[in-house]
Image (cartoon, rainbow, N blue to C red; front, side, top):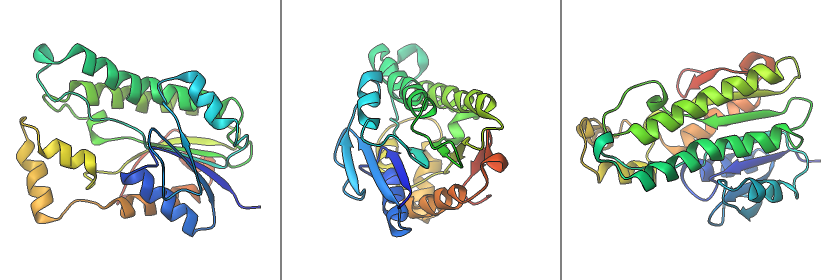
Amino acid sequence: MRPTAVVTGGSSGIGAAACRRLREEGWHVVGLARRPSPEASASVLVDITSFDDVVKAFEATPEIQLLVHAAAMLGPIAPLAASDPDAWRQTVEINLLGTYNVLRVVLAGPLARERGIAIHMSSGAASNVKPYHSAYSATKAGAEHLVRFAASEIAGSNCAVCSLNPGITETAMQQELRSRRFPDRDRFVRTFEDQTYRTPEEVADAIWELSQREPSAINGQTFRVGAL
């Protein structure tokens, strides 16, 4: 029987690349997103901000060996004092509450008891202060800390939860970021113009590499693509 992976945010970007790479390696891949995931073996439309929706989405996959949690949004890019409260709240709901919902469901049952691995896609923004990025940075920091809490609770179970920081990766989110105005924008523009960014395929390679490691060696850690 083929191993099963679930990829949130599987409709585009890193999530789609992860679906494609895992399928190439012989996995049955279920893509979870608000839009269809064409690179997955099967596609489930879901709003990860709804706990009940996440529960229903996993009913068809009662046991998985790998979770790749790539669903996220950029959120408002503005000074905190001028930020849109509704947009800020939505970022929390997707990036932090959505992470809680997904981990809450998979750790309660679907993640395989033997060598089950959950990989959360984090960001350098989780540990670095970036002006105008309060919503994205705060939610990514919270989600990464949530991963560490989860890891502490499953230690010794032969399962693992870890984070992966992809670095600047050329996706639709990066394109959106370059269209905004904020301090340090030039760094992202230069990375694009110099083509020193990572590709979603490079990140997918790192996801695959982590999926092959022993859970006890990666549980609770945060890794960076290019430094595995």
